[in-house]
Length: 182
Image (cartoon, rainbow, N blue to C red; front, side):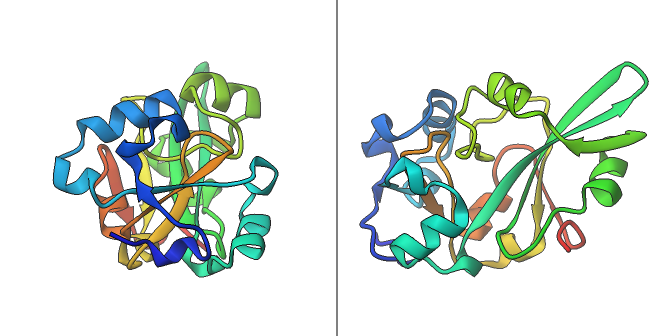
């Protein structure tokens, strides 16, 4: 299988290269239906180029084929709930609208980097919706779900995953929302 959305990079089946995956990501991919897991590719990259704009420029991956996963913390009183939002890189997640309401929070904001890294077991700049904590909803924008393929993080900064948008929409705890991105 090939993953053209990776630009000039050559992807391989993700499960063939667990060394390019954060541990929670590798475990989650192994738990997927084997036919779905086979749709996920991974490619090694320069970790200094992990941020979306630099990655796309360096490797010729289309910006509209990249999706960013952001971790949001919603608070109501002493309770903090987390969610992951997957939106195309050319958009932003509606954190204070849809996400705040979905988390039943009074206030929602991007989770502090240290919290996001500690709780997910992934590297900052590589956090992905694959392998997140089981009590987190994964909010997927409808444009991501409709994309033929998207590039996302792999849990580490030295690689990227490529998968069909429809598979991102079928990840455990995924919820597709038409108004997640702005």
